[in-house]
Length: 625
Image (cartoon, rainbow, N blue to C red):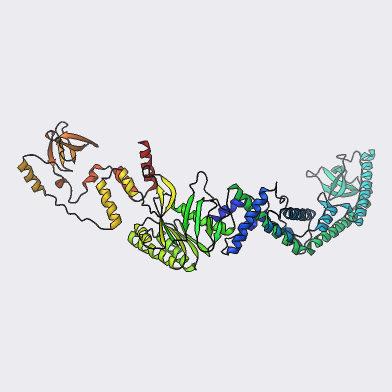
């Protein structure tokens, strides 16, 4: 799931949820190997899309996740006014979605049937809305509360009247710092100059930060303040009783409310899946549990832009597919596309493909993709791949989908190819459906011979060397080494021999007898002419300098000479032999290297090892031409 990036697809789909209820379900959603479960999940998508097409909106807006609130009730805690209002909003949302889904029964008979299990709690909803207004317990929630609050207002008014008389009295004018009435610890006070605090009868409840002002509750209002405190305590007790009553009403229906939460969560997730499907023009594919995959114009859900669709079939006429082709040609993306589309379908997600697409449901999906080098366990890339394959082999049981990227790579080619063939054979015998990418010709030959194996190739443009990212089943593709070599000017007979060696593994051991230096001298004497050989050092008479023979004499009596990094044609009468190549270089020395720059030799080596940078440079040179 990590290698195939299923969680990244889930994150995209979660964006279409309206609450954390659906998001949490998507987080928990895993691929299923039960075809009945997968069929139900996919059928939900079909019905949900029909609803989206035939309605303006889904009334899930305003439905929030109240699971933490319900859990508090279950533990015996008393809910706050805000929490109770959230419960009321949720219950109202449940009633709306139930009515909506009943009305949509024609388009979604199965999906609508889920709403039959949604319970409506009009009594709880109405009781909460009657008792709580403006995020506080309303005075009309009980007669006792109404009476208490009325008395609070009376005493509050009496205190204010007394204080107004106090601050407007001329006798108190000199004591007052500010002519306002304020509160400290919910008790009314008057700001008094600290120098007069002993002149005013009353209780000092607070002092300003600089100490210039004290806040005094005058003695004249003390008895009213005490009564007001008592009334407010009674108010809190009565509010608590009302909140307790409402919380208990919820607790009595907690099982049904939790069931509502589960159903609303399902609806949120299902409609998110449907919205995602519409956004990608997705299809609900046919499914089977026989191992048959037929992806027609399938696209990887995380690829952006102009994506080349994938066509791939396996599980009917053959059970193992070997994909070949050039580096960066799309082999790994093809493997990942098959894997992620399979996992998405098993999760019940629609996919971006053609309507003819059919996906098999597997017991497991296993992958060995990417560089698995383990620094912690000191394992090489090859060792990590083999360890991964070993683990897969132990866990495989029948109908599994196995995806191998560059199977057998990272070791000596003959051993790697032999091991890869044996591994593919073993998974085939275990009943698995296997797709593997490779560069090894031996694996391609084995696939050609085995009746239940098939080759496929990633195409690329042989003129521009650009990958086409298109998979063709029934045709293997070589890596692009020979085509690049031809573009770089390697002789055709060299490429022909290389192609024969690759195909037949039969080597032409032609032995060439090279004449020793003495023989050359004898031949020179016989013909009375100097014969120039590749690699001879010669003096250029017109330049009074030296060069190296690149090509022997032609029909015009000219030889080609490398002189100061340039090839020039010089008539044999204008040169004289200085030193023979046999004296300059050891026996078997590669004379071609004399005429190839270090830069070109490095490029050739990069091409041989499949360097992407080298390939890009060649493509750029071809385009410039």
